[in-house]
Image 1 (cartoon, rainbow, N blue to C red):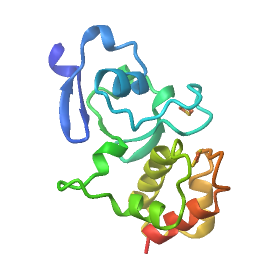
Image 2 (image 1 turned 60 degrees about the horizontal axis):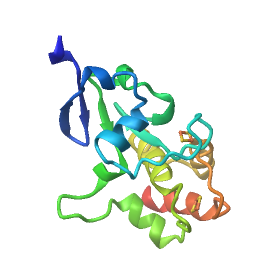
Image 3 (image 1 turned 90 degrees about the vertical axis):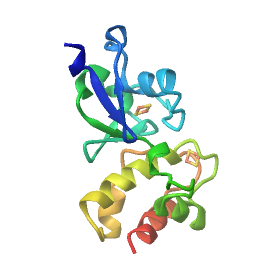
Length: 154
Ligand code: FES
Ligand code: FES
């Protein structure tokens, strides 16, 4: 029934049109909900720029069918903003550590970090590096990104 075609995105319950069911979650978020913080880097699951958090797990939205997330809870980078528009501590750490250059990879990086810190309060540097290894960055050389996640965990 149409009652079952719902998805929660950043705390808002959305009903999904039948004709949208073939979209990827990436297409749905960007094109239907205008959540353009979700980046389309490669479209084939190889870069992590499209990472969102689905029921607490970091997932690549380009490789996720919208039809597979019905009834689930999706968080995008837009959903991390505080009620007053303030940045999430992870986002602030990225800024403070100089972990953002062109910024294209940043929303996916932040969401992977967010998912990691949901699971583990104080991950080791090695854990952070592994957890972020599916997110590619052409600019920073990764060191500052690992620093940022470590700072956010403190
Ligand atoms: Fe999804 Fe690259 S756009 S992994
Ligand atoms: Fe440019 Fe990461 S800051 S790709």
